[in-house]
Structure formats: C-alpha cells, structure tokens
Image (cartoon, rainbow, N blue to C red; front, top):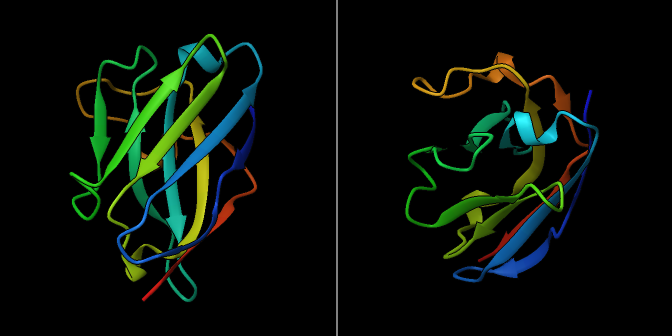
Length: 126
C-alpha cells in the first residue's frame, strides 16, 4: 500500500498556472503508475492524467491535453501535475492515486488505482 499526500492547490485566476505535488511513502511507488483525478461539486470523479511507472508513457483526458503535464521523480517518491491555462471548469478537488498493476498498452483503468490521497482544492476564478 502506498500512502499519498497532495499539496499545491489554491485559488488562481483564469489563464493562470498551478503545480500540484503528491508525495508518496511505501516501497511500491516506483513500480506503480500514478494518476490524477478530480471531482467538482455535484459531479462524479473524473480521470485527469496518468503516468507509467517508468515515466515513459503518459495518458491525458481530452479536456486537459495540451494544458496539463504529469511528471514524476522516483528518487523523491513524488508525482506532479503542472496545470497551465486554467479555466473555471478546472475547479475541483484533485486527487492523486497509485496503480500497482496496470496495462501499459491500454493505460491504467480507474479500478487499477488502489491507493488514494485526501485531495487538494483547486479553484479557478473567472
């Protein structure tokens, strides 16, 4: 099991940027795909981005492609989400998650993610 703690959320204006961090503890971090999800008020949780354990393969939701970048530093047990050109519709609680077993070809499914952080609030004002 991996313990995850997100940070970096906050209030930003439309068009601004934020970088979220997720610090992980546990021996399986470097072998796990890492992902970011978000949940807006009154909406279901949705996939944002994921990154393979090696960092070689990345996966993005269409709504964030070209604006968000996921990265990881296995030496620091940390995964990041750089968010640029933020829009009000990006407002949500963002969650970090770890998937110890997944398909590199297909990308990790939401059900592959077994460990979750507590979330960090991102608010984009118009």
